[in-house]
Image 1 (cartoon, one colour):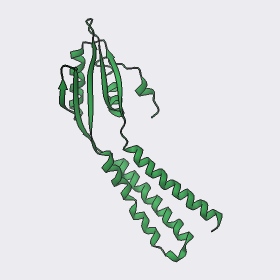
Image 2 (cartoon, rainbow, N blue to C red; image 1 turned 90 degrees about the vertical axis):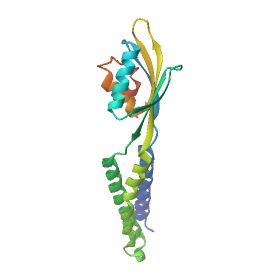
Image 3 (cartoon, rainbow, N blue to C red; image 1 turned 30 degrees about the vertical axis):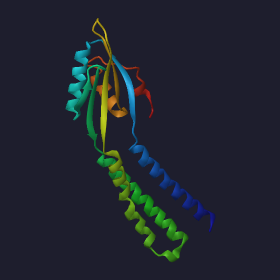
Image 4 (cartoon, rainbow, N blue to C red; image 1 turned 135 degrees about the horizontal axis):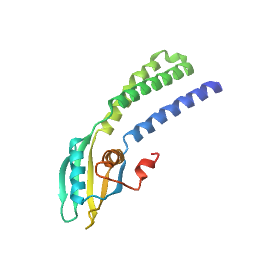
Length: 184
């Protein structure tokens, strides 16, 4: 087997491995914890956060007054556009693998190009893994006598970023900024 065929096969297989790892990363659990502070009273902040969450489709499932914890739940849907992109990339990659196999072994005929029909499996795998129930936990860490409050939020990283960006102005929420500065 000539070296160009070997290297082409190797690169095609590496692309397939990259797609598998991208699928795993796209549906990975990114639950994190962040502390947010506000100069406003704790009840006002909790009410504002609860209202914002309910408008986004979250529902309050439980609470623990003794531990000062509220729990919300929602179902996260998969991105249709990302599923289509992954299906397209999977079909192109599988088609390329079929062409490489056809080139390496002409006696196989044209049937290796049928591997391109497996491409939509990438989108289906992503949709199954990305659609899942999520939870968000709010814990009152500190409610000052002077009106300030500190909340500890535990949820998916993207939801915490959206919450911080949306409520920074109306509720004067501020965190240490680690969510907005992290590259991941």
